[in-house]
Length: 287
Image (cartoon, rainbow, N blue to C red; front, side):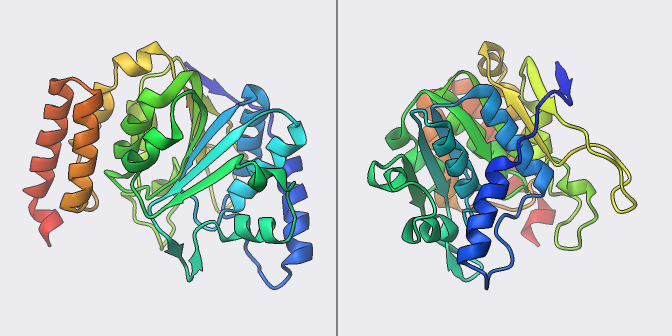
């Protein structure tokens, strides 16, 4: 079921952390790369689900990370948050630089870092750290490369560790339609995942049309994991048959295949193998 305009967006955590950043880091202009309504949507989902164990895949500077930590601290309830990024540096700064800045300048409660409520993992693929993170994850933010295979590879990795009813948030689900010169029209890994995954609840908050964006479909969405999500996971693996935007390294493909072999039936691994073979043989990808 598609559930439209039912998430009550919450902007208080965003405004609070931005005020702290702007006061203490005035020379920086860009703190959170998501649009305001996208950030409000995430915080609204946190209000709705009251998660205890959060997984974030794709961190960049860490502005969104800091916003969520601000909200979780304000709730004054037990939580743990794990943030994963394959990169160690991006745009000439360390991954999670804003979270580090918040820590060094006491912008968040000290117990966030002293008690390891938040852990940052960089320089590794998700299958390499997911066992350390562990199970019972009840809230996910998946925001990585946006190009196929991209997010289609990572969702099956986290699925065995997600709690029943966990909420998965996908950013940039309409990036391929935004006519952004930086992104091509095939930046559709997240919308492909959102379309292929089976879930009884999928959440979208439509937005007002503008002269720049003459449609209401949002750039952020979420779905709730249930038993049917697991039963129909082959739909995600079948989506890998579409032509990929890039070819992962042999090392990356091996790491993911080993994980799939451990957690999924042989026929699922066969689907993955065939998708890899087809894309390795695709002339367009060899140019």
